[in-house]
Image 1 (tube, rainbow, N blue to C red):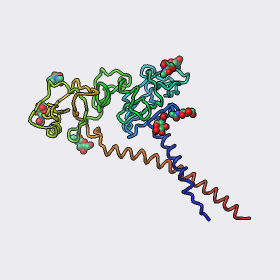
Image 2 (image 1 turned 90 degrees about the vertical axis):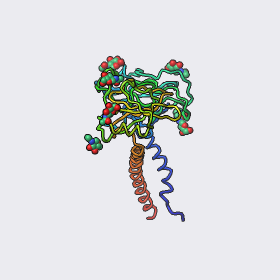
Image 3 (image 1 turned 90 degrees about the horizontal axis):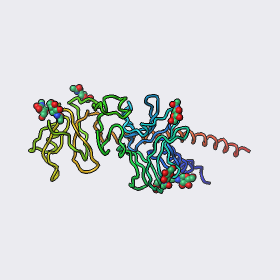
Length: 321
Ligand SMILES: *[C@@H]1O[C@H](CO)[C@@H](O)[C@H](O)[C@H]1NC(C)=O
Ligand SMILES: *[C@@H]1O[C@H](CO)[C@@H](O)[C@H](O)[C@H]1NC(C)=O
Ligand SMILES: *[C@@H]1O[C@H](CO)[C@@H](O)[C@H](O)[C@H]1NC(C)=O
Ligand SMILES: *[C@@H]1O[C@H](CO)[C@@H](O)[C@H](O)[C@H]1NC(C)=O
Ligand SMILES: *[C@@H]1O[C@H](CO)[C@@H](O)[C@H](O)[C@H]1NC(C)=O
Ligand SMILES: *[C@@H]1O[C@H](CO)[C@@H](O)[C@H](O)[C@H]1NC(C)=O
Ligand SMILES: *[C@@H]1O[C@H](CO)[C@@H](O)[C@H](O)[C@H]1NC(C)=O
């Protein structure tokens, strides 16, 4: 006689359950059938960025922030000019699927992507670059992206601006767009444990106070900058033929910009804690996955326990005449 094999029975259940579970807690995508409510968030696949609703000035905004920075560092805001004034709020596709829109209780559309794309299977996905894209599923056919609509601070890859690792001097102003106060570093440099973040496609900062040395390469340039506590960034002085020479900057970096194409790599100095470390990122990914799986397994275990208990009880019943 065939033995009762709980695992065989449970495997499909387990798979369904786990996929449902991780979908509901760790998703990075909105589809026509899955809106984002005020209590939910999207987390980019590597865990770097979170999209959701945050409070400011007694109102609520839809925005994107760094997941790992506890004091919310908002990098993009959708409805800056029309905040939500109650507890409602849902980010959803318009009924014909061509736009993403933010609605409040009274079904007021407070913000919309306002495009006229004809997408067959539209999805909106939060990427690990901090870019929120509206696109055709399974393609790179992007119809709208938050990077084209920079609001607050800018991230590498955004059309123009600030670079990450910096934040405006006034937190309040910053949340409400005004960046005229200028930027300060998120974490002060401490000279001994600093590192660099690479900004691709950069327009180099004003070189009035920069120092050029055409005899050394990028590695030596980096060391020279690290050794000098007042050095705030470096780059190749000549980008032709794979790059050569060394420019170092001291003090404020004036007029550093980022293009979507062209330009060159600029390395700017940040505190060691701000340097993206690949292994840390992997650990964080692993952390998120482990959390999901563990929580899922815990729930599953309780289900198994009750099914098992119930089956044993029934089994017992049948045996006894
Ligand atoms: C959304 O739901 C409708 C109705 O249940 C279904 O026909 C459609 O295939 C779903 N679309 C997606 C992308 O899941
Ligand atoms: C909230 O916003 C709606 C729509 O803009 C407006 O009609 C309503 O008066 C506002 N409520 C409060 C309490 O400000
Ligand atoms: C979708 O609906 C909006 C109005 O709700 C309209 O402006 C837009 O043109 C429509 N797009 C398509 C592709 O039908
Ligand atoms: C996107 O494509 C994947 C893989 O083909 C599919 O599983 C998923 O249902 C699609 N989603 C939408 C919204 O079309
Ligand atoms: C700089 O930071 C590192 C790591 O946090 C620390 O070990 C070191 O003592 C700090 N140095 C100074 C000068 O504050
Ligand atoms: C260059 O240095 C001078 C003197 O410190 C300063 O006044 C000026 O603003 C600096 N220029 C730039 C572009 O950083
Ligand atoms: C750091 O670099 C600046 C600019 O190149 C230079 O003036 C200064 O002397 C350097 N400091 C040290 C300690 O080498």
